[in-house]
Image (cartoon, rainbow, N blue to C red; front, side, top):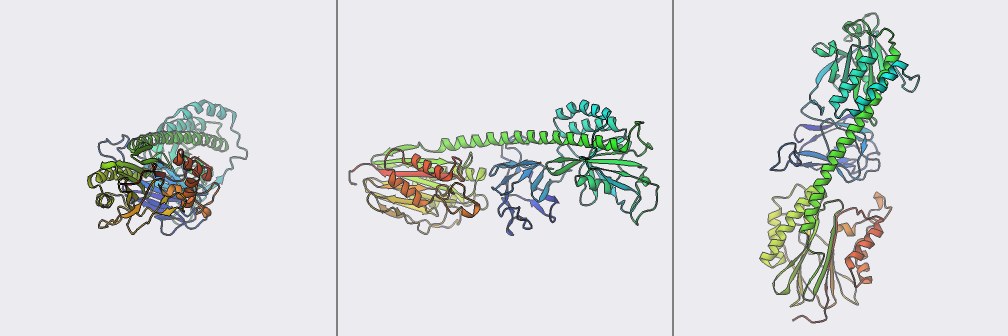
Length: 574
């Protein structure tokens, strides 16, 4: 789903809408700069949710995994949560949106609308409601908690049809099962499965049976009745006497309706469908002992069962979608692990150990160890701004190109310059890469490095304080196509260690931190202090253990990478 799709509010403090236009991402929250600002209620977090567009991939047929473009919605760790069709989203996970979905960011409920009717089961007929305000039509609200015991015979019918309702595998089958039970159990001739009232006063019929629903050209419904049900209140309307009403209004008797009943079908707190019944065209019910109260009770019972069945269908649909997403993410994570170098290695007196942990299954961090001639070794650590699939794809492309460029040029400044020229025209909007690339030469004892907006590298010498390696004035990769990259030089020797980490290590918040205290991260001081205390064994494993203890969880807030290079022998450089 790409063009002509929108998020449109159906309830909330004010009207709100957002055109879903690629390439995204589109932010939702309590900031005026967001694509969809919802600033009227503090239940909405400042950065509440994000919509990400995933285009269809080449080589796939429509409908295949990867063959359909789609928008993905992720809750960004908001205080009060985000829901799709009554199901609360796990923070930081992306959920695919479908046309007709209801998104709740309290107190707003928004519907995903598109060029079609908005139902997954196919198109629907657009019906009109009539303004019956001020006519003798009487709308009676019914509290389903009060006197709502079903008549004995209708309870038996409910139990009989319960199996077919809950066995329905899609909305079309569910609607047919409910309409069959409604017609059999109430005596109403016309029964319909409808969408709630639209802003223009129209309503969409998803499914219907009976003579009135077979020809909808001059079909009209009571707007008062539909409005009550659309707001979550089961109700019935009685047309009385054909008396004249307000100017422009109509009596339901004008359309041959003596009585109509409507009950809401809900997902969570949102009304998504209506069960409608009337007796137009027949002059009354076909069940002799039917009372209006029993008919409404029965409709309420059916609507409740339909709500549970729809919730189960939505859970099953989301489970299938998420299983597909998980499989894609797992495949991507496996490919990323394949591209990473071995965790430990060495070249002459130089030893290295490195690790990259994604905040989710796939990440935007990478590290690489690139052996060159004469025992030289190039070490790179990169961090793509952003998360998810787009960041991981850019990460993989960056790592692959940089590896080749370093081997071609043998110089970090030339390699990063070539990488920048490659990345800039291909990067997604608002994406760039911070990067540290260092060339270690054990023959001369020289470290020549480029820090492209990264900033998290330190030199640890025995007996002295940690020394931050100069950031320089190099821009992150992908920001400016004409950027020039200049390398800095540093002397290293026996016993020296160089540590480079990503911001996922530095900014990992302390356990129990609220949004306001996220600045209490692990910090570069924490990295250096840990490595000064641990000088042997697997220092990087010890570092990640300390970060997890600081975070209070093994699931870190962001992608985290750390690489340690150490000169392990006492032999002086040549």
